[in-house]
Amino acid sequence: MKVIIVDDEPAARGLLRDQLEEFGDLEVVAEAKNGVEAIVQINEHKPDLVFLDIQMPVLDGFDVLPYLKERPIIVFCTAFDHYALKAFDENACDYLLKPIEEERLEQCLAKVRKEQNKIENISEILTEKRGLEKIVCHQNGVHMVVWLKDVDLFRKEGRYTLAMGTNGSEYLTDLTIAHLADEINDANFFQINRSVIIRKHIVKSYRVLASGAGELDTFEHGSFSLSRSRLVDFKAWL
Image (cartoon, rainbow, N blue to C red):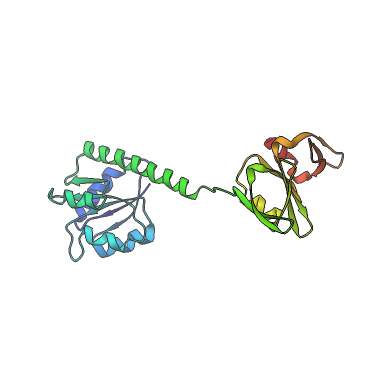
């Protein structure tokens, strides 16, 4: 976890740095002696955690916050207890009184790690690729929405892609096989060659040919070639 220490007192910065060195998962990447330096260092290094003094010349700790491009976990460190309510109004993770006791610092870091886990979990949820759930197709000149769960396979058909439905219906879409392969985030589908994507439950059998490529049979849609470059991944997928 990357850490920045902000304090206008050199002795206070040094003491906290020495205390933090006892924790193997923390790395102090920068220090700042005033609010202006703090803004520059935090925006440059993008730390996970900042220990931020409150009373400093020109800009105090609270004045720093609006200038941060990305908000790290903030722990306010001060010799005064009357800023506590304002600190938590600013969504600080914790509020430490100087001089900082070892036990109190350990408690603080336990809270910080929990907060970091929450942030990482939320980030994973926000960045997780949801993938296509439905596609716009056309059939006999009529446009319609077809749900991915109702498709057995996609096959290149001239300049279009043919979507073959589980009920025997066939639809055309303008989306290419390459685009569909990138956007479908469903483990039930697999691209077996440059022209075909299939759903797992339609696979009846497959065999490896002398060339190293493969061939697979489906229950209702005939046989398809299996690219040699996709064979290993296909076996793992199946």
